[in-house]
Amino acid sequence: MALYPVIMCGGAGTRLWPASRPSRPKQFLALAGERSLFQETVARCAPLASGAGRLIVVAGVQHAGWIDRQLADLGVEAAVLLEPEPRDSAPAMAAAAAWIAQRDPEGVAAFVASDHFIPDHDAFRRAVREAAGAAETGRIVTLGVRPRSPSSAYGYIKPAGRGLSAVEAFVEKPDAATAETYIGAGYLWNSGNFIVSAQTLVEQLERHEPEVLKAARAALPKGETTKLAEAFRTSPKISIDYAVMEKTDAASVLEVDFEWSDLGAWDAIAATGAGSAGAQVVGDSENCLIRAPEGMVVAAVGVSGLAIIVEKDAVLVCDLTRAQDVKGVVEALKAVAPGRLDFETEADRPQTGTLQ
Image (tube, rainbow, N blue to C red; front, top):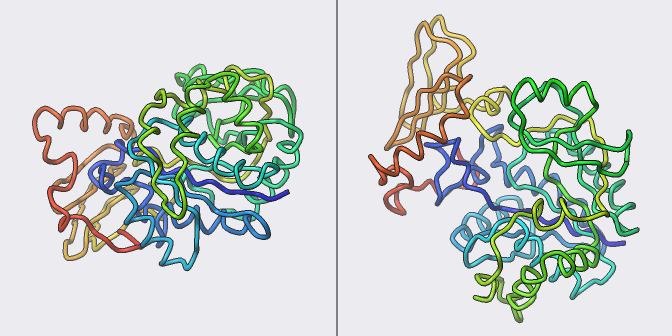
């Protein structure tokens, strides 16, 4: 069996404005250490492709430069599939599965997000390899993280048992009270990682969303080009959860206990303990996350529990308990200051591999 780690580089990271922008989304930022989240994911996943497998990256064509630079910084090679436009996770996964199946009908794909925080690389790889064994038998295995708190920021999975088991239900992000009941009932956080043979995913898409598979197959690049063809735009825009996981009878979950976060908002960045960056002077302040670009100093006195995020064209000051509400700020900006939704010129966008 050959393993093909597939790093999915979609997502806008709108709750991490003003650092995360459409032209520089969060996966290319160093938000929890010296390397970007994408680079950490590459380092975590590349060893899985040893032997006959291959590392694959699926990303938007507008982010090709980031991919090339940050892979080069690590000295890692990958097959890169570039989407002409985002169509959500199912079409992206369909393209990668079709690409793998075309080259290796027995290949097993490990679909992982490019922007998750998993500091224990060895534990992650052990889990993927265990899940791959079940994937060889035709199961679609997702990694379910044992919750550390009743979070309302994540979706949940109801497993049929402990360890590796069938999935009884996928549930959406709950309110705080419902999350408490899920914890007591043994539910797991839905990490959004999927391990499945390329052929199984192709068959499932053929059964449940044939138009997605049709577009993906038609879009496969010819020769050495990495860009998916224009046929990719004809795919229905749909997530893998709705396209397959909520319909299939082949879903399994592997319970894992390593540290994991999707780093979806500034409170999650603060919780890593490694999110601050730049020059800062702090007096009588605690539990603050402060990030500033090179050449700028942030001084904070007598405050606590704040995210202070400085970019050259925008500043966010946010109570960390309200971090999820930053998405509303981005929505408001569309009306009052649309120019601040992204960097105005290419020169405004930091281009280094290890970003602050």
